[in-house]
Image (tube, rainbow, N blue to C red):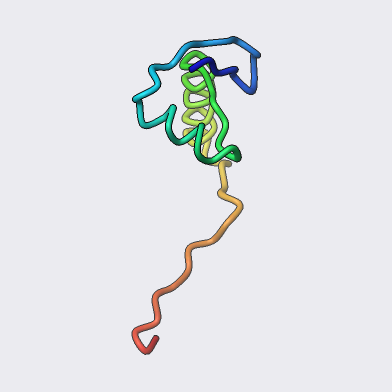
Length: 67
């Protein structure tokens, strides 16, 4: 299966039997990101977390014992 990275437009080949290939084929809303882009985003996110000013956009929900 040929896939294209959403960030750098690099075209890769995936084995048709991999879980990622099946997920991309069956659910078109899922997107593919190459390993280089994934690692770059992971490193930059970790660097932002280390600065202390990184905040998630969603808040954790408190568990209610009565529900």
